[in-house]
Image 1 (tube, one colour):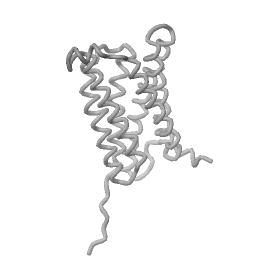
Image 2: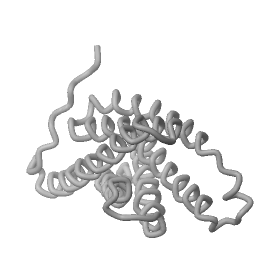
Image 3: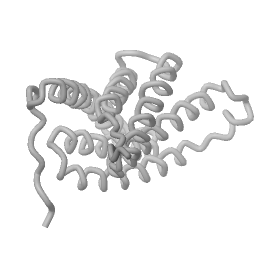
Image 4: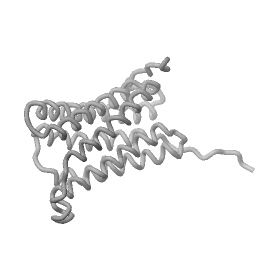
Length: 202
């Protein structure tokens, strides 16, 4: 009787690539480089949502609750954002579109800010690229939260710009992390540096 154990490939590169793509597209709109949300939705649903959800489920199968929870949480976030944009655009009917209270999104972003802080603390045991991805995700949700509670004025503009810049940095770091995961695994050494873990928290 064979005692071989089924193994699963590390899905981190897929999850980070999905995150990199969706934040690249979304940050272009926040920065004013592009306009409108229609062409964002496919990338949100397939890269931001589905790719990260698949990566999360594979991480759970590997017994990695940290990666599984993080990727699934953010994957479900992007499904929610895609549906939110469809409602806002009237694609799901006027009844839904006219029943919007944007402060509800502000509370949702606060919830994601809270869980991201926990992920950021946990990532101190992984590598520095992942830590800074979570750090800027936390800044992204901070900026989004403030901008949705303060819908106009200087505070709104500063918070919006914080979210936009943070999202672009998340994309750059996620591309780096995905590429590093692929090449370092393929070559069997740290070809692309990702920085050692900070170590255990005391």
